Amino acid sequence: MGSFIGRDAGRKPLYGVIIVSDLFKLPNSLVSMYIVTIALVALAVAHVAQAQTLCAPEGIMARLPGVDPNSVKTSPIDGLCEIAIGPQIVYVTPDAQYLMRGDIIDIETNINLTDARRASARARVLDSLSTEDMIVFSPEKVEHTITAFVDIDCGYCRKMHREIHDLNSKGIRVQYLFFPRSGPGSASWLKAQGVRCSADRNDALTRAMNGENVQSQGENCEDLAVNNHYAMGQMVALRGTPAIFTESGELISGYLPAAAMLNRLESLKAPAHTPVE
Image (cartoon, rainbow, N blue to C red; front, side, top):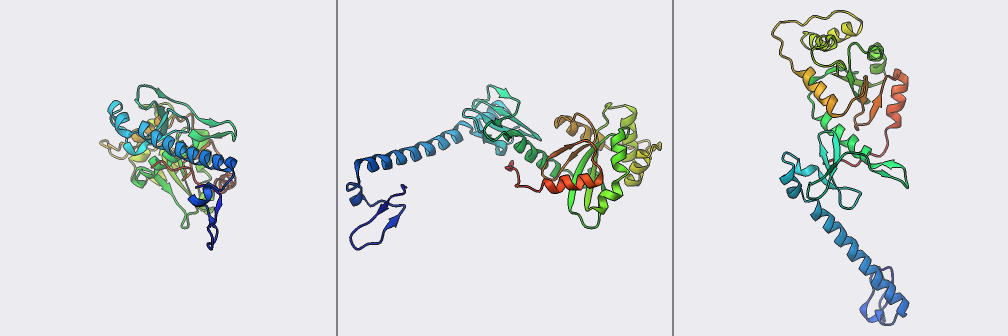
């Protein structure tokens, strides 16, 4: 409604509502302004309804089978729809004829809108992982949780793990996933597999990070966690290790000393990202 004040004889002013009998008593300029306001509101409502229709999940799923209908959203750009595919955000035309990868940046605020949505998508995927698939070092009182993709032969990964007790003492829970940079079948991959196939994985990881040769216990170990970790790392387009993700899906690239890590985590306690439902 408009912001005018209507008044009838013997009645109190009505804020936000204009009485029809008073409309005709207003100057023509105010009447015109009121009509324009109503028209703009109607257009805005129509625009939202049209956008929701354009990005209807049914039409997009017909061209892209397997897409989660709950992941289809309108994007900040007219004529583009947003889809969360695992931890990735992509954009498609309403008819799913064209798909685009890239970031949408608000030039006025210099905010990367896609990155905020991507972080939420990553957080959702990481939350879906079972701790059985990770190697977890946790303090008694957890203040922060980080999930780190590591390569046993990565120097900075080893440096990070040497500070695991310091990280825990600062209330930081560390969840390890493997990302052997040299790929399947490599020496780093076999070391990760050996750790996963050990009776005490935490101890085995610490020994491996210290340069010890950790042998797989049991020739028939069929643990697939390394494969799954590596596939997830490829999905989020990891460039190196350690790649550390916060609970909100923010990426911290590379090693940080324990004190600096705590400062970074505290600084990221900001308004939450727009959730990907």
